[in-house]
Length: 426
Image 1: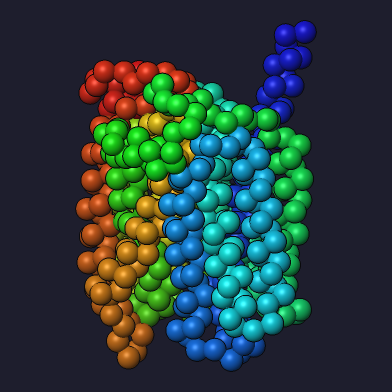
Image 2: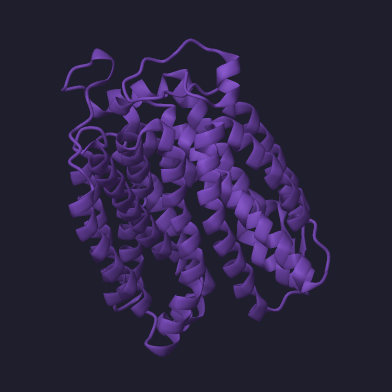
């Protein structure tokens, strides 16, 4: 009898993680399809490249703003109801993108998609922290985040096929339809999650800004957010200019780029599961440090690569994507475990907003470092790579300074450098 109950519980947990991964897939795919749609939108809406850039950036800016706003109420409502509401509104906003008759309406719809979609990752990770036991959080987080790799593999070719054959609105119709399916699955498989208990003996009527202050004034939370912010900054100093460098400096043809992203996405998908399991077995901090240090090698190769055979380029880019995205899995598990349940939603919302802002700032800073010659070659990309390496080193150091809580409600343990370095629950 006990065995049957355990089997049912394991099946329910798997269905829950699959549903959360589907939500992650939907809103990441919504963001990623914009880039390959550039030529279609420029022609159909009669807009310039700067106007298209605003279509992309308005999503990130709206997501950062909504992350800050949601931090004021994320822990005041039941997690399931809030997640279902925001995800349903995200599906509606995506459908509005498909129905937009002109550029201003599409810009508005993209902003709304960012408002509702930008908070979803934080809520998904907070839900994992609330429901999944500490010893399986790394694997669960890895499964959910592997949906990003699936979106990167499927998003570009699928959106191009739909846009070519049916028109640019149809990728958004597809994403909205997928989102509706996972709204229904979420309603069925996410367990009822009541509002988190009041933190630190506070009152139920604690003002939202007081909850944000409670998150920010704790040193452990500040370290965790700095750790995640520097990680996002290091990624976006390099990734946005990767395609231009491969074409202008390494000599790849535009027709070969889908192969780069397909192989990188597939490898990242399988690597995410492996790294998630390692985080559960070896400890979150120890796994992060190992993967982050290993990621430095392909990062430097990728940003200093000379023209070479396609096979070597694909090997390097695949390692770059796999280890670069893989280190985010134990990093997110560390962030989830750095905060207790009563403040987890507020913390994750603030953390998401800071990462969005860091990503935008990193793109702007790298833009000042990188320049493009008339023949298409980039200069300064190597300097951006070294900056990413330096920031990665900072995160390796900070990871060991963050205290992890094994269970929601467990009081923070006294600082112990041995336990912190291993990443095991104290």
